[in-house]
Amino acid sequence: MDKLETILLEAISIPEDHLRVQSVGEKELKKLSESILLAGLLVRIIVRPAGKGRYELVDGERRLRAYRMLFEKEGQKWIGIPAIVQEISPKEAIRRQVVINENRKDLTPFEKCKGFKLAWETGYFQSFRELGAVVGKSHTTVSRAINVFEVLPPEVVNAFESGKIKQTHLRFFSRLKNREMKRRLFRAITKENLNSADTRELPTGSMSVG
Image (tube, rainbow, N blue to C red; front, side, top):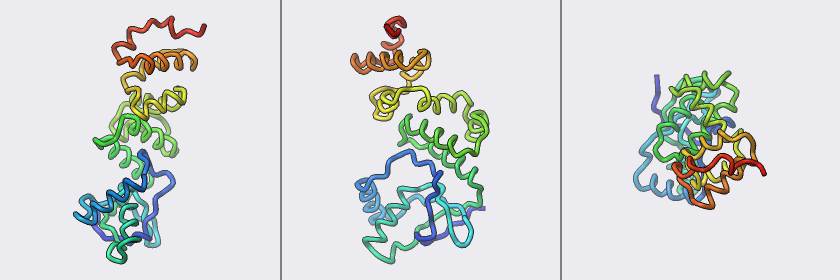
């Protein structure tokens, strides 16, 4: 059963396998801390007991870091943070993080793909099918998300992250045999600013290595 508690900031750690899919910049944290200062913490963080009075973060890294910033600036009033305490295993914590990420509307498609990749790299899951099952997604969805980082050239991944190419473009890269062909497709998409329909019309031969 979940417990609602106020926990000392120093008792909470962020585990190494925490799924950090967004960067946590000082400017963003300052803005969030100012919002919390004015309106309070509207959504509690989630933690799991880690023994000896310690806790590990499950969800709410930016909120936790913003609270730590407030403690440094404003003092003892911010020494503890409201939290939901859940008695769950490390594997279940990762599952919760993937599910939370999948339902967050502020995450980009790239960040959601990154969440699957980081979850897979924890080693808690034996197959894409198992990972997909615990978060309610098909193994094909999980495989495609992780393959973004495995089979695409770095410039394509970077363009996907920045939004220069869309998720709908990615299936066209998976049909090509080697990285040079994928790089040629990438150059064609970005040079001509092609949408998905335009990309579909590109002749396959134009991607071949000459």
